[in-house]
Length: 232
Image 1 (cartoon, rainbow, N blue to C red):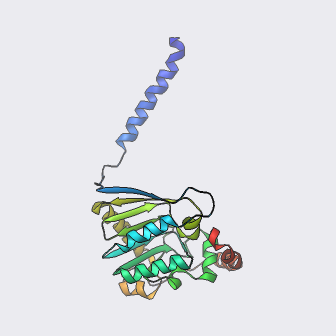
Image 2: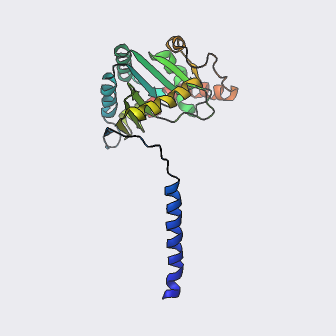
Image 3: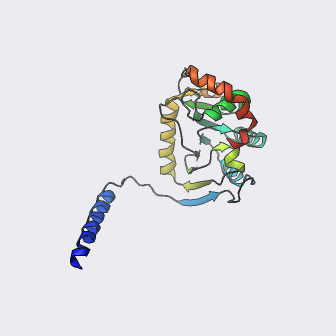
């Protein structure tokens, strides 16, 4: 019996050693969180009411100084665009960071933007298009340097009306300031894509060139992408 148990004991000891090593590698720069709240959309299949998006916009409208939106892309219907318009009019500073056509990896979304317009052409606020080598994947909203919402919600119709998404509400000055520093780094590597963005003096003044093949693919796919934009 001992002969049979010996390999198990060895495996258990190795597992404990590995676990201790992993714990030793955990980051030590934790920050206090004053309040947390898990927000989510309905779990029903297929079409649903945009409850999560409405909750996010209601929280954003409470901001008194600034709102920073980070999303890989923006594919919005009239209702979603109007809510962002209302947010722009209600908030002293609205910054939007998303992928550029040159660096983004979602060809279908870029194709939809060809016909329906890019965020820089359709949204108010300072729009910055990331030109970092790695495509932006962060979905977050930063409010007044105090509240961070982060999770799986893309600013698109699919996340609002079809998919089940979650966002974690975190009230913490330290965390939000860390996220704002991350956003500052993104903006420094982003193209100031509209007049509001240029007026901030932030970002880059020259847009990265879109590869010829990528531009042709987006043009070819644009009619189909626009037709089925709610599924993107």
